[in-house]
Amino acid sequence: MKLIIGLGNPGKQYEYTRHNIGFECIDALAEKWNAPLSQAKFNGMYATVHRPEGKVMLLKPLTYMNLSGECVRPIMDYFDIDLEDIIVIYDDLDLETGKLRLRQKGSAGGHNGIKSLIQHLGTQEFNRIRVGINRPPAGMKVADYVLAKFSKEDAPFIQEAIGKTVAAVEESLSKKFLDVMSSFNVSQ
Image 1: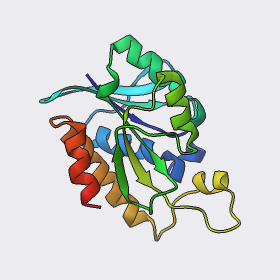
Image 2: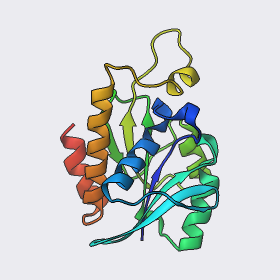
Image 3: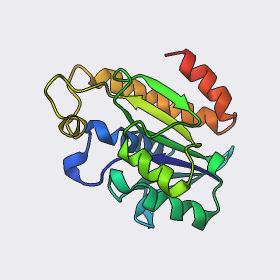
């Protein structure tokens, strides 16, 4: 089974904020696949989808961003999901708004959700789709920036990024992640 994880924070006040782009991508996949996240386990909401390529689980950890690993590790253990079968989708300050970067490993780069995953998974080697949100303007705190909603100017870039993320996830179900990286990282 494949496990697609979108990082974010639960609650209405965090909806459509930069830090919740992972949740938005999971919502887009759930809508496209007609698979509402209606099941709960280990402090996460999920849906299991039977696709031609095999079983896929869509997961939104509800532990808040900084504790994402506390949900993901038990889910992986309970459903016996291998590390190479996960993809984590999250926001990245170091990429232009709407740009994607697919990677198979790397440090947390200051991202607390990824720090938590690395801590609980015991490795930096897992598939990820980083969605660019850009850096905050001068004088604005990073925390305030990532917890703010996207501007009207950024909205079309974010919608395009969500569409590309959905396409990358779907392609990864039938191809090696390395091949998907090659095509999506080049097309940026």
